[in-house]
Length: 307
Image (cartoon, rainbow, N blue to C red; front, top):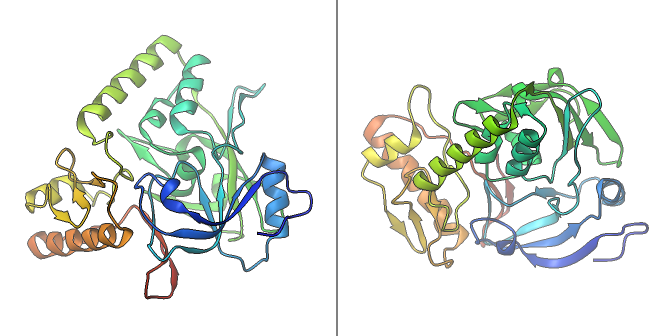
């Protein structure tokens, strides 16, 4: 990719995205960028063509990039948007590239209670904001006071939760749709660090015992339907352990698809997702909604971006 005046980060062409997503599968991005910091990310956005497809990647969880790759620019935020601080008013500010578990530990260190659930989210603050991520009875947005966004002109914009439609694993802007999450200010209650650290420890132990963390995965694949759990339905349908090529429904947790040998194609993962949905619908009449974002181009298809 041609150099961008004033951009201090790294640019690469035809970057294999399997290196940067937690499923370890999928094609290449036409361009990949690693900004140096928030201002550098703004410089990049302002320089890119306004119709350039963008893909924001934190830790690469909750994301499947098709084998045909992503025809656009992938911006990797984990090493760039990493500021994490306690503000004078007691709020916690975290940029989008901060790992959610790190934010949870930081909150505990500063005697803030309520952030412990973030330790169970295998992604970044940006991803948690984009999908209202949650686990163990808590979600991200009830703790958000305001968010910092960047638009395609490289301008910084501050918005409040009132500017978004927020639901279960769902966030939609009501204002501009060309803005990306760059950070957020969270409000947690005062608490005791030792108690918060114990809750984090217990949560992580539960996660380790119940989820296939030793194998490449993208987190929970399906949203829980109202009044039920996707994992229960998938297991009741007899699909636990089902294989399709190199992809497999986890034998440890049925709402996870794993890539045990690191050899699965994105197409195999996507077909396995569709097969699970079809069988659960046939057996129980329940339409499982995909929680994982699927983007990019099929090997013999047009470019697509899906929620």
